[in-house]
Every structure is written in C-alpha cells, then in structure tokens.
Image (spheres, rainbow, N blue to C red):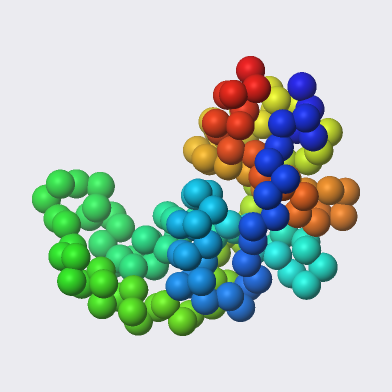
Length: 143
C-alpha cells in the first residue's frame, strides 16, 4: 500500500519564526506529537516535537532524566517555559527531517518509524512541500 492511500491530509504546521507557545497550542489542539516547520512555499524545513520543547525546558537535565534519582520541580519547568514561550521554534526544531513521500510503501514507512523511533512522519510532494502526515496509528489501522 502506498502512503498516498493512508496519509492524513493534515497540513497543521508552523513557520520557523512561530513562537514555542503557538507550537504548544497547535500540538495540543491537533493531537499530533510533532509539527512540520515549513517555509513560505510550504516546503518542510524542520520539525518541532513535544520532545524538542521539553528538551528546551530542561537541557542541562536531559542526561539525568534517564534515572529516577533526579526530577526537576514543576515550578522550575513552569518558569523555564515562560522564559522560552516567545522564542521562535527554529531555535529548537530538528533540521534534518525524515519524511515520507506519496509513492513510498507502507513497509518502508514502518521501517523508518521503527529505525528512527518516530511517532509520525511529514509527507511531502516532489518539491518537498507538505501534503500531509502519517502517524503510527494511521499505518496500523490500514494494515
């Protein structure tokens, strides 16, 4: 089965100069775990995920978070979020984006998601413009 047969034609995205707060609101409202970052022509230039934003909140703690011996306080996270809320997402986005293409098959997409540990992939056309997204559940529900 080809990606064009099961992608979500969801064009929810942000531009590189969109604020972190705007991205958080879009993530919450869309139910997506990451947002493609697009340029003025709609080409995917990055991706900003929930993980990227959380990493921005606690960058010095990321290595420690892998153990239960250290957890930052909620007050500290709230303070840090207020500090970065107006920052552009370009500051925290991943620039090397793994994408799916309309003609990719389901096995290729499943392999990419597994190997890269991704919950979703932006889907682009031949010019690299966003045409939708494929989530793991979209793939599973079609199998």
